[in-house]
Length: 265
Image (cartoon, rainbow, N blue to C red; front, side, top):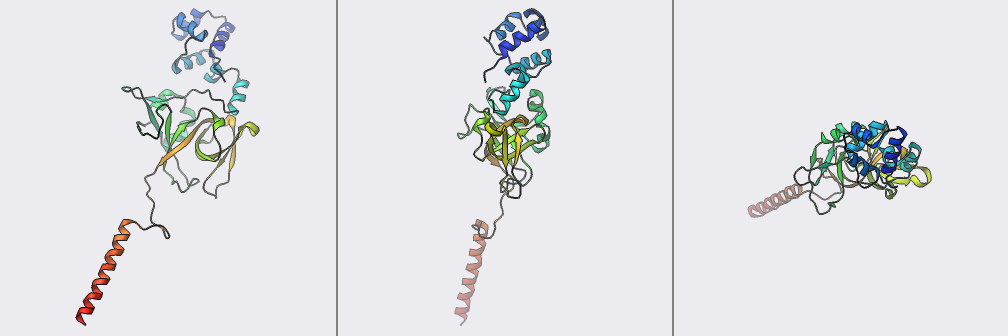
């Protein structure tokens, strides 16, 4: 779906009987700048979009994409046009990976679009060849055992998905929802037929469940995970280096004892 900002901006201004200069003054812009926005020759920054939406008492979604009914219909189809708040390195101008720890995850569904809220989260750079430099990545900490063997407390490194129709195939994703917050699940895509996503856990003790597409705020495709809980050696698994050394030491001791007994005999 293409942006309708230019035509919406002009229509909303005329509905209220404002001149370009009057609206520009309200927004702290010059009239030529506002004119460029209305003619589609320039795109405003996120902060200006937020001011515009507040000025007309509507959401940024409605300002950019159209009426409430149209926006709702496009959302459940996985429409690719969304406003994403990112963190940028002030020196290199490269995007940084924003970390959403468990304590922040509860408020993420409310603050994900607020640049000030996002700026308070920790960030880091991750210059790895496996990560595309032109994509946006985010790291979410998970809790619970629904996705074992990935343990609770792990951090899931994800790539932003702007087109929800591309998700599915039971691939792992982080899904951000209005009411349920942040969850890490495998996705079965039923947006075209049922306007919903079906979420599956790797732990068979947790049953799959469906969420309405209109309740989904963001979708992030899992790329890797970081865990500080190292696995323990279990029966049937390869022994660790320490256990092998211990077994060899025991074996040497037994061989030496046999040799001593033979010498004594």
